Image (tube, rainbow, N blue to C red; front, side):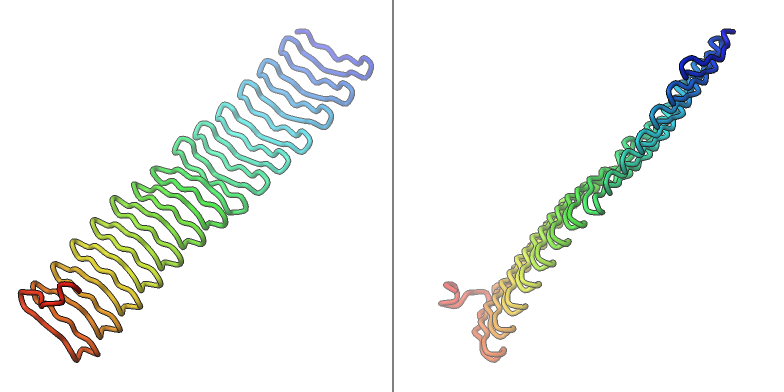
Length: 261
């Protein structure tokens, strides 16, 4: 069965070539190997591992670099100078740490969550995709046709959600939105906007004081906290000033001079 134990110049081993097994020590380099099952335990200059090539599994320590790998199940845990991960290639899943950068990824489902001190990631998961950087401040996301770009502490974004889109900046003060034909621009903490909503349009400025509005043929310009306006409502026009005290009104026609206004 080709079995022997030999010591020669500090080289000691126990081997059975029939079973293809041996234990060898050569200059402090020791291992137990089974070639039939394709498995061994080896230590060479402080680098030790347990490997089964048939099952494709091993645990290795090489200068602080350790891993457990199962190629049959396509999985491993690997530590390489602080870089750690657990991976399964069958499900294509892993968790990796590389200098504080962690993620969980599933390539089959196309899912992952990578972070660098919790700041950055790029994810794709069943139509859900985004890029986020700088402490969660910025991202570009696609989620079932809903897309946006958001920057600077969640203050600014561009979003399209099944034909519904907007741009929002500076703590929700300003935006341009389209939602099934409903569009507006809003600035200065809700003071000013241009909106279209099923034919209803207006421009509003100065903390609700001033606006130009068109709503189903109803038009008006209002200023100074509701004191003054020019309005058209189904052919009925008027100009009112000074706290609602004074006005000029016409019905079914514009008065002379107001057409120019």
